[in-house]
Image (cartoon, rainbow, N blue to C red; front, side, top):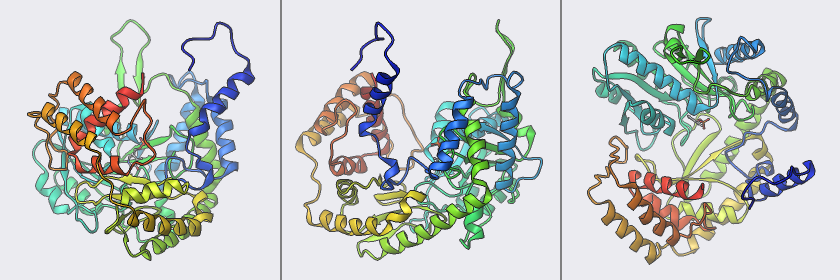
Amino acid sequence: MTQSLPKQGESRDRIMETLAEFRHDDLDWKSGRTYGFVYDPGNDAVEIGKEAYALYLTENGLDPTSFPSLMRLENEVIAIARARASGSPDVVGTFTSGGTESIMLAVKSAREEAFGRGISIPEMVLPVTAHAAFHKAAAYLGVRPIVLAVDEESFLPDPASFAKAVTDKTILLVASAPSYAHGVIDPIEEIATIARDRHILCHVDACVGGFLLPWFRELGAEIPPYDFSVEGVTSLSMDLHKYAFTPKGASVILYREASLRARQIFACASWTGYSVVNTAVQSSKTGGPLAAAYAVLHRMGERGYRKLVEILKETTDRMIQGIEAIPSLRILGRPAMCLFSFAAEGVDVFRIADEMKKRHWYVQPQLARGGSPPSIHLTLGPTNAPLVDAFLADLRKSVEAASSSPPAEIPPEITAALASINDGLDGMGLNDNGLGNDRSDDGGLDDEAALFSGLMQAAGIENGRLPDELAPLNGLLNSLPPALVERLLIAFMNQAFR
Ligand SMILES: *Cc1c(COP(=O)(O)O)cnc(C)c1O
């Protein structure tokens, strides 16, 4: 490992070789054997995205009056997103670095609105299936998340539970179109009606699906109204770097009215330097992702996207049929588009994931939370399409292999390490309702680091590297209270990055 700057500049070849070498263990997303992380529209669109990104890499989005082309690009990209979300010309938006930033800004705007109404600790109501980014926004912005349970078959929240959860401190109701974990669409019309009747805001998280859903509907999928066509929906987030297939660093946050978006914008004229006004979180920022988004959207066009949706829809149908034909597996809920998850009866689903990895397929394990059983999540992309039969054949083999191997046992060292952590954390008041409504943050982090470090060692985790067999670790995480898992994850990252 290089410990410091080289004395003398290295050759270009050397640097590029080194970088290529560093990538050796990275996920091979071009193989079509991964389900998530990278949304690949094919070489042609990837190349134009790279070119546009490079062209704008050094332009600075800090000040759109100095780089008017960036303002123009943003307005044009927002116009496309607005049309995808059935927005009237009054709908305004901001280009952001990703879904998390879009969501944080929506929560920030709602919080400012609440401050304007004299609410000091505002509450937002969200189903347990809403993306973790809302919890992050809550933690960063001092908003209290009120988490609702969902039905254990459909994974949808009961609209009545929103009505019950609203208090005079509530500022925002949250719904997903669709949710990440199960790919199902919340009852948005009902939820937005409650928001409108109570004069509070309603955000639709269409980060993953917002861009493609209209084409799925066009091709016959059953998609209930979820966007600005629904009265009461006041903001909507839509990632471009997911199913618009643009390079990473691209999402939009849309608002029904400019007056609400004004709450998102930050200005500072009280320091000694230049006047600051930022629409989003970052200040100095590359124009790369914005230009790349513009380029890919225009290269693909309506036709290009519709063609991909045809492929994705057909692939999803075949995958779901194939998975349901395997006796011990079942699809969770009724997925709306091309991401979904499945659970296993009588087989350790985390072992299935390990077996798939041995066969060079990357699938995403999900812990049991909020009534959802332990499961495997698949986000489909066009590159997965030619491999449906191969995937299903290996999935059948993996289920068999996982069923015939003995259940994952938690090594005694881990049980011992856990016991000492439990002693150490006793009285920390870890809340175990599985909904994460109460986060107590009074633990002594230094003692904790030592305890967790022992646990990680026992679990075979070293320097940010995970063991090959993850089933025992996933089984362990699955059995622990969410608050403890969160602390463990923090300890892991804190150790992995020096
Ligand atoms: C991915 C995702 C997010 C978060 O987006 P990032 O781009 O990863 O920050 C939020 N909501 C949903 C439904 C998502 O799928």
